[in-house]
Structure formats: C-alpha cells, structure tokens
Amino acid sequence: MKLKYWKNFSKRKNSTKIPATTPTEIDIVLKEDTPVDSPSIILTGNAIDIDYCRIDDFGKYYFVGEPIILTDGMTQYNLEEDVLATHKTEVGNTKAMILRSSTGYNVWIPDHEVYVSAQKTIVRAVDDFSVYFADPIGCYLLSVVNDKGSFSSFAAQYYDNATGIQALANDLLDGTIIDDILKYYNNVSNAIISLKWMPFDYTSVSSASGMTSLENINVANHTLGVGAYRITGSSIYVDGATTIAIPWRSDQDYRCAAPYTQFRLLVPMYGFVDLNASDLVGATNLYIQYRVDRTTGDVIVIINADSAGAIVQTLQFNVAVEVPIATLTRNIGGAASAISGGINSAIGIAAGNYIGGGVGLITSAAQMALSLNGRSVSLKGSLDGKAATAYGDKFQIVGYAPHTLDPTNADFIATKGRPCQYVDTISNHSGFVLCENASVEIAGDNSERDEINSFLNSGFYYE
Image (cartoon, rainbow, N blue to C red):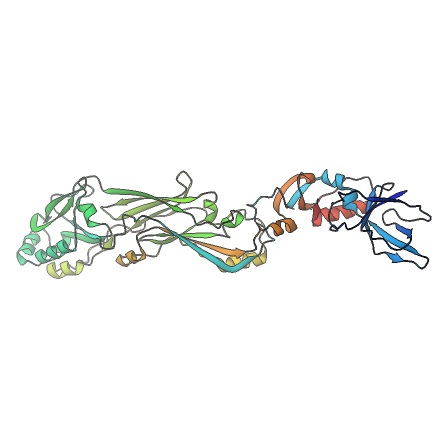
C-alpha cells in the first residue's frame, strides 16, 4: 500500500481544493486494525514534515494531525479524511439551490450580510436650464368684466408689469371712472374679478404675438388710459422639457433601489416631491416635461425615467399669487365681500407605488438603519407664494444613500459571496458557495454524506 504525501500544502477545512503538485510516495504496511476514515500510521525515523496525504487503496484524501514522537524512534501520524476533496467530483455534480456564491451572483438581490449604517451620503444634481414658471420679477394678470372677453373665458384678461398696475390703481381712484363703473355694477369689485401675480417673464407674454395684443384696459365698458396686453390668441400654453443626470452611487447594485436609496426632486414654485428609487433603476437621467397655462397659472409636470422610460410621477399645481386688491375695491365701491380666489391650486396628483416591493432579506439592524435614514413620502410640495422664487428656477434632484459595507469588495466576495437564489450545478461556480437543503449523492457511509451536506449548507469553498 502506498502513501502519497505533500509538504507545505495549505487549504481550508471547508474546501474541495486538492494539491496540484506531484506527491512523494512511500510504501506503508497496515499491521493492525485502523479505521479508514481516520487511520493512524507509524513511520520509522524522525518526524517528516507531512501536511497532506492520500491513500489510493482507500480512495481518500487526508488532513494530517500533529506528529507524535514515539520512544522507539518511530513517528505516529493521525489522519482525518478530507471528505470534500475525496468527493470533489460528486460535490461538483450536485444540483442545488445556490443561495450565495463568489461567481454567478445577482447584484440586484438585497444582501442580508451587508450592514447598513445610520450615516448617509447626500448628493445633488441641478438642472442647467431655468423653467418658464419661476421668474422672480414676474408680471400681473388682471381679469375684468367687459364686452371683449378673452380667448379662454368670458372675462377679459390683461397682462401688465408693476408700473402698469400702479397706473391702473391711479385710474381707479378717479371718482368719475368709479361713477361710470357703478352705472353697470353695484360695486367695483364685481367688475374687477381678480389681479394675480404670475411668475412669468413679462417680455415673454408681452411679445407673444399669438396670444396677446396691446390695448387700453376696458372695465365695464369704460376704457381706461392705461395700456396692457389683452389675451386674444390661442397660444396660451408654454411647453418645456429638460434632462437631469441621476446622481447614482458609483456601484450599481441593489443599493440603488428603495429603501436603500431615496430621491427627492425640488420643483420650482412647488417644493419637494419624493421619487421611488426603484422606479428609476436602470435609468441614467430624469426626463422632465412641463406645460404652463398662462391664463390660469396651472402647471403640469411629468417626470420620466429617461426620455423613453416609464412615467414615475406627475404633478399639477398653480403658481398664480392673488394680489389683495379686494380691500381697495371694497373701500371704493362699498363691497361687502372680497374677490374670489381663482382656480384650485392643486387639482390632483397621480402617484406611483411608493413602497419598494421585493426587497429581499433585510436584517433587523439594517431595517433600523434604513428607518433612521427614512423620509416620509411627501406627494405635495410646500412652497407657495412669491417667496418661493427664492428657492430657484431650476429642477434639482437630491439623493440620500446610507453607508453600507461594500459588497463589491473582492475580499468580501471571495469570503462570503453574493446572493444567487437559483438552482444550479455546483461545478458551475468557484470560490465560496452556500447551498440550501443540498444533499450529495455518494457511495459512502452516512457519516460522510452528512458531513459533506453540512459543509454545503453552511458554506464551503469549491476550488
């Protein structure tokens, strides 16, 4: 019987690795009973540096225990079978549910082995272009009753700047004009419907040849000496579109999705709106389209994941700001009630699914950290009024990403693998492999099978 042995060979206990070098062979003779799985051999002479061995007659590889120096010039070695190396072929041929592996993993499956910290990184991307509906100077839209009307309503609508509105106020303080208006209406407030400040560049509305024409303001069939731009045409809408790069973390994996990553979009004149990061996975940019109604101040915003991607959020809001002329007209005409306040400033919101589905396994510690980093879902912004222009006229996306263990680290992958969650043949993998309910088919005793299965289902290295 021959013993093959290797010196300076090192391997892990839970590994299928076998030596690639040529072993040294010596003859041995069994002189007494010994178990095949854990034989003891006695060699003549001083101890030799044996690290690993194989006995072909048994068909097994063995770990070598500490040499025992005997008193008669002999050295005893207690061997222990290396079941993973002995049955490497059978292990490799086993089909099993692969939970984790150093190869063939899916980076989009959440990893419960990765801690989540309460610390986070905040990133921001600001659009390069200004929106139409957030001009800080703005202009004024006057709605009055007369025989002219406008394109979109019975009331006539005039655009003017601050200087023109001041001139209008001066005219309205003229007692003769007031008397003329009172011939048609009980009070002035019934003739002047509203005055709204609009966050639009005055030049853009005064030069809109398809929408406005310069005329003297007419109130209750009385023509004032003040000129303004009456809405006469159909070009009342302004459409815009822009693209913002999504500030993803550098490593593209499951941590890009909710609840690990959160995004909020700052919409000018509206405020923050939460975006579900899971809806944006795979996208490079936010593609934002908007439409502005210059007769009402209504704004519709549609947010897409990339230009051809799915709609992830829609918003509708109003940017018009009521100017309190009711007090002035009430004092002049004795009106008992104030001017009504225009259209509903928030007609409705179509929101996506804000609960991230299928997040996989998340440990309680990770859930706590994510909770600490969590933000309430705000579907409605909180900015309102002229002061909202102080927050800028550009879309901004802000990302919140909690700190985690780096699952892309080569040492982590080699030691722990990453999630797989599919059935496969073990030999298709290398490095660390963790199976679920795997059972190897071998022609051997039950203890070997149980030991191998224990390795496969607790994690081993297929090398």
